[in-house]
Length: 266
Image 1 (cartoon, rainbow, N blue to C red):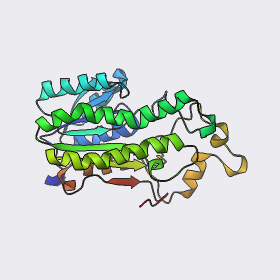
Image 2: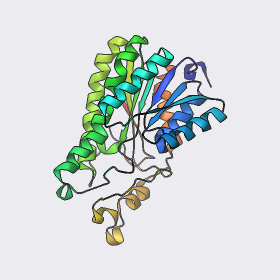
Image 3: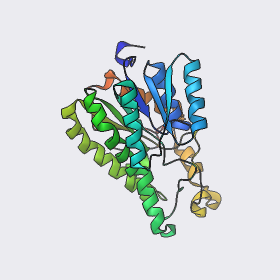
Image 4: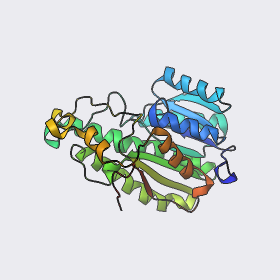
C-alpha cells in the first residue's frame, strides 16, 4: 500500500455495507487503514461485516440507517461525528439492489408508485446521504465522497428507463456538487457498473419478457454475452478505493464505469 492509499487517519461511512458491493468496499477501505462505519438496515448482517473486518485487523463499527429516510441518515452522521470527531469519507451504496427494490420493468408496466420508488432508491437516497454527511465533512476539513450507480445512467437500456433516468440525475447532481463542494476541499465522484457476477440483481416484480425473451435470452444473459471481462464486487471496491484516497486528489465530478467492456460511454 502506497502512502497515497493510506487511510489510517480517516473515518469512512459506507452505506449499504451489509452485503454485496457495499460490504466489499467496507473491507477494502478498512484494509487501507480507515475506521469504517458499516451502515445499513440489517443489524445482524452489519455486525457480521464488522466482525469480519476486525478479524482481519481492521477497525469497524455498525450504524443502523435506512437510505430512503433522510432523518435516519442525519441522525447516523451526527452520531458518527460525535463519537469520532471527524467524518472524512462517504461511500453511498445500497437501496437500488436491496431485497425490496424493484427490478427491470418496461415503462408501460410501471405504476406511479413504482416511478417514485425508483427515484427514491437510485437518486434521492444518494442526495439524502450526501446532505446528511456534508456539514460534518466541512467541519473535518474536507474529504472524499463516492457515489455508486448503474451504467444505465450513461447508456440507454431497455427496462431501465426510470433506473437510468434517476441515476443520470444523480450523476448530473454529482457534477454540480463537485463545483460547489470543491470550495470546502471535498471531492465527489461516481463509480458505475453493469452486471456483477458475484452480486446477481434480484428480479423481484420485473417485466417477465425482460427476464426471458425466448431464444434471445433475458437481460442478464445478454449482458454476460456482451461483456469482455468478468466484474466482481471487489473490482468496484478497487475503484472506490482510488476515489477515496489521496491518489485521486486531482479528480472530482467524474464517473468511472467498471463494466468489463460492456460499453464505452463518453
